[in-house]
Image 1 (cartoon, one colour):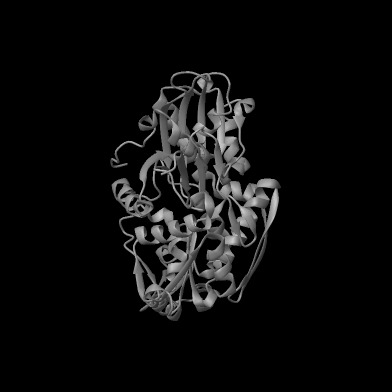
Image 2 (cartoon, one colour):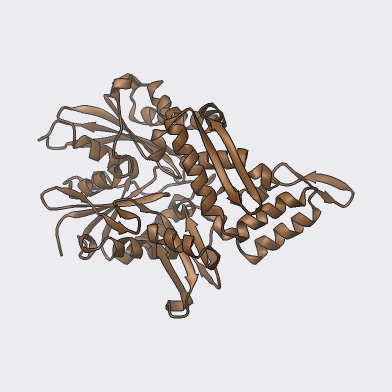
Length: 435
């Protein structure tokens, strides 16, 4: 069996794999995606019925899943951000045509495609595999024990020794490899589902122990929550949120629970089932604005969730570069062309930013450190590019101490390095306990 280690950053939005050789050199695995080679693999699945496939259900993952879905949207079921239900005990299975798949089954299917599309670098895996996990899972009441069990069943298909390490520690180890002097480092990892923070002490190269974890904290608020804020202000009111319905002789507000799944990328695709659509049709019949509920039904029936996701992502990226952007969406008798300012967006996500800021302070407290005792702050993950997110750190640390780069790949790079470290056991996430 080959030496070295594999680092897998299984993310809510994207996944990345890095491989370290016996000498400690690390290479990112590149995928020959339909749109061109890329080391970032979208954490998405697409299913469709095919009589020649095992169980009559064919599937693809990553950019291949997106291509398949865009070519045949009505014949497919497209799932993304499914990592966000790992710690959710209420999620039992996804209904896909006539099949019901549990989280670990979805994960195993995704992992098999991820490895297969990696080609030659992943044909003979090393014995040591290091997988990133959030400091805190997504959800109001996440069950970390359940999440660990589901992860273990998912990654058991690799047939290798798998270790779990907090995701920001992977990024910290990667950043530490750039340093030539001792330093105390805070890493902020902004994923799709969680925002996680770790503090590490880095010694000079050649030290018996190069890195020592000092403290961590996390919260289940990140990029997907920011997406929901955009949906909540620009889309859901046009689909009936805030509207009313008739119940006997009363006019009542439509319960917001009808829109919860619609604002969650991991559950939106699963709304296309008979039970949910029957409920929506009944609601449409009693709604005072049946056309709005009809638009919601059309979005679900026509599998327009990915188009909405793409429109939201385009707006977020625009607002990270400029002070205003356009939200453009057309479909299901719905046309939206809204000019959104960065100030609008920052106002929408202000409560989320406040809670993220509190979690940064929790990480510092867990390490027993004040902000002025941090030498470097490393920001990683796509949402770290949002100016209001960066402002959380410029308010606490000197601008000169804040760095970024390799926002989507640094975790996997560091996880592979940790797999080669002599003190690997010190980096493994502690036994799961209630959060």
